[in-house]
Image (cartoon, rainbow, N blue to C red; front, side, top):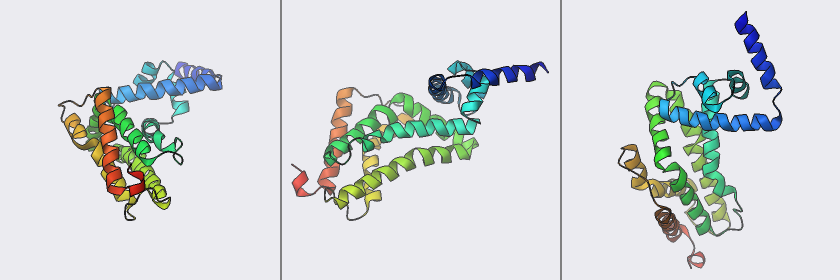
Length: 221
């Protein structure tokens, strides 16, 4: 009986949160979940996530109905951040600048030691929970590939790139060019940390290589 009363009180308290409080709680939950999943794996409990986010368990379940939903939302948020450059003034920017931004975002976030550690956790967890690997791919790498492919196809229609009509394969090669040995070293635990100058150098190099392969002569200057 006492547990039922406590749950009712928690539910009522969660329901009285203002929109700004709910937004703040959601942001804290996603941030805490990312760290808890990274350090403790997918077996981490929802109670532990709620405690790390400094919210009630009821608030956590009100925002995300299950651990699977929380995990997917966390992946979607991180994936959206990775794709952000493709949405920023995409039509008016030189494709070289856009590609540099995409590569820079990858190096700064997806290839950082912290994120590589998170990626290693997902690979490990997917052995026991195959749906986790599938969820990560669908909301992360697959979405990134599709959005980059769509952007390349549009640039091709505008005459600013020429991949021979295979924008998806070109997008795959560009993402592979970015990660190259960086991701492999990170997954094997032999270091990926780069200084900002090295990130910039690599990002510009990747964009330049892609433009030389698929950019018309008028845009290579």
